[in-house]
Amino acid sequence: MIEAVIVDDEIKALQSLSWELTNFSDEIKVEASFTDPFEALTYLEKNTPDCLFLDIEMPTMDGFQFIQKLTNKNFPVVITTAYNQYAIKALKNEAIDYLLKPIDTDDLRETIVKIRKHNAKNFTAERLERLLLNFNSNAKHKKITFNTDGKLVFLDSDEILYAESDGNYSTIFLADGHKIVLTKKLKEVNELLPADSFFRIHNSYIINLTKIKEFLKTDGYVILESNHKIPVSRQKKSDFLDML
Image 1 (spheres, rainbow, N blue to C red):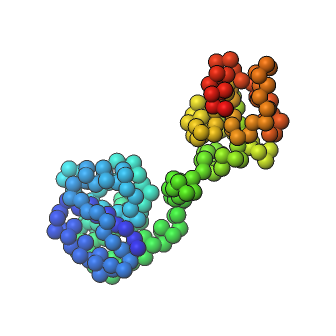
Image 2: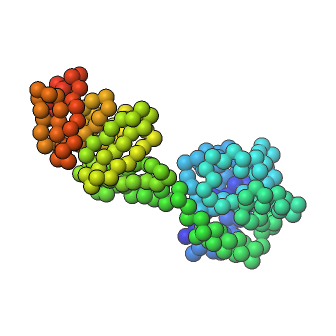
Image 3: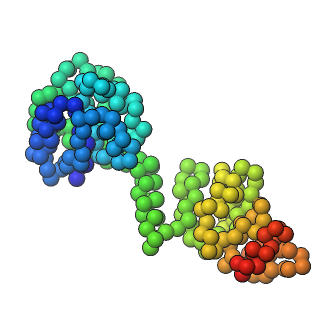
């Protein structure tokens, strides 16, 4: 089911298009409609429809200005207009199609086919990323998520040994011997890690508390299961012992 949003300052034109779309109720659904383009922009900042039907001739903001103001452009735009001369400009503004008013049912059918093809072809990495993040936000599936090298990495706490600071970068050391370099400061990494199993033991290190094998009190070091030797700062020692 295609979820559509309609923006048209003429209430009769908006109602007419909504009515036309009911002929394709098995394929497309009007999720929201607006006569005020500013209200529509606010809605689209937080919602991503499968397509947008946008009128060009609006007195407070024309359709092309509307497109320029969109912060979220992860959906195809169909221009609706009574003036054929807008067609070329519409396509240059990345609209996938335009419909001349009054809108013909056959034209609308062809537009819906274009929307389907566009969305099938453009199931973008960004949309997939949102899907993965939404899935991961479910407590049942939740993992620690790192964004690095143009990809998302999902890890269980058990897979992480410790994190080390390198100025504006941080390195995550994994139990399988691999490393992940992040363009984040250690403070930012610390905010991503669950507080019940990770502890910033030193300005330069965060450790997984479940991976500690030994704590050398006199020397001020912990030995992890991997035999990595991590220093415990004097300032953190008391808090660290409380965690244990």
